[in-house]
Image (cartoon, rainbow, N blue to C red; front, top):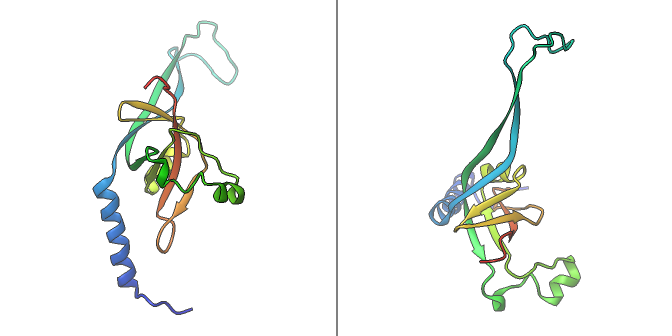
Length: 154
């Protein structure tokens, strides 16, 4: 099927959306489950047959963390929310609790969030509470996640 836009025009539009993301994205810090590394300090130990009773092992947990950029939207104005309207709820069976936060990430942020337990930004900690929602102009380039704060005191 023919397209109304040339490939160059599609690329220009995609670059504009990428510029929009880069302009408004802020750093989000992620924390994954610690990686466990077992170190054997006795070179004469045979790990296959568990030989050598003088074995000395050390277990070390390596924290996996880092950051990626995301556009962040807080649920502060309920008058503008279309997600929790009765019409949407009856169609999608989706109810978002008060205080949710929506973040939109690019492909690298998506790869990180699929294996992440929690994220931090704006001096608060959040947990991922939804499935991913991909979207883009011509193909999925950005992904939306809904988060809930884990620290209820703030």
